[in-house]
Length: 415
Ligand SMILES: [Zn+2]
Image (cartoon, rainbow, N blue to C red; front, side, top):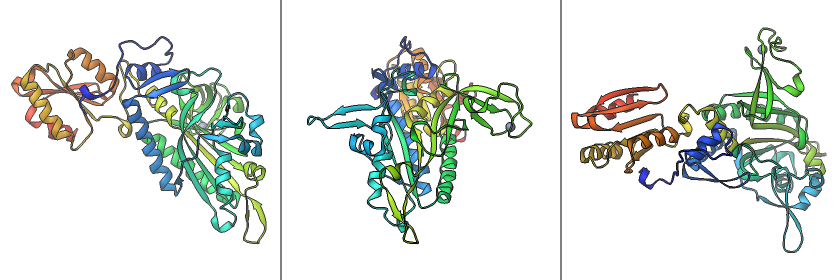
């Protein structure tokens, strides 16, 4: 990609309402733009990363044997009246009426719709288990939308629903999805802790949350410095310095966490209220046993930025970075710099993702933008080109090296 053609409106200063660094960096990097409170446009760079997260999520969901589908965001109120949530959900539910005065909602979650889709089909134990997921826009009318994509009113989620004949089968899936979530978060470059949680609005029997430790998180987590133990502070009553109840060796620490995923054993809450039943192998009718598994795609994007932001910008984790190489032309009135940079760009772009800064900006502002765009390797074609050298900045190690121009490509591929 040529930067002269890239729509990435970078800013010198973050907007005043950007309280957290991920919000500041995403706005300054021209990745998102606020359209209304809690409602954002994803600009090309933000969308590119979002799509990489989606690709990883799809790969891991498909590997489990789950099928992707797409449910409507616009949901008739009847389905939520069947489950009882139309009255219970509260003011966060985005409600609306059509021209015939019928009630609708914009889905914050899709248990009702998926149960409606599956119940007519899964009448026999032979049809189960079923695992269906979607990546979709969700809505919550937050009283106080905060921190950009962290708590928005419109956001992107992956939601998976599983349908089973037995609790044992649900347990197997629950464990598999848990492991898939750990792989997803590792691949997108996030450290997560898994905590036990209350089931809340979703109902059901057992639930866990996947938390990214961060000072801007809205939950408080107690965790062990030695083993995997972690719990929401409301349920553990432990405090800093206590001995870990799980391994009996480590010390308890407390930190804020951002919830990026959650998994629930719903049991028969929705299948009973919405009459989703199957006939078992003894010919007896039973409610289907369900699980649901959410993953905040747009919130994951924000959490990645939060965890990978440094003093002057960010460095993307490998699997989600928009560009591996960022080539800067120091002076694009210098024909030799331009010619050499173009030559590397043409060759590299067949093998890797490359951004070429071919704009007529000062080198200083090109560097500032490169810090925000977040490629790990920046290659500078400057004065040294005349002597046959270029400079490579390895941003992860914060190192610069001067390399012989004719060896640049083999050098890059090796490093
Ligand atoms: Zn421990």
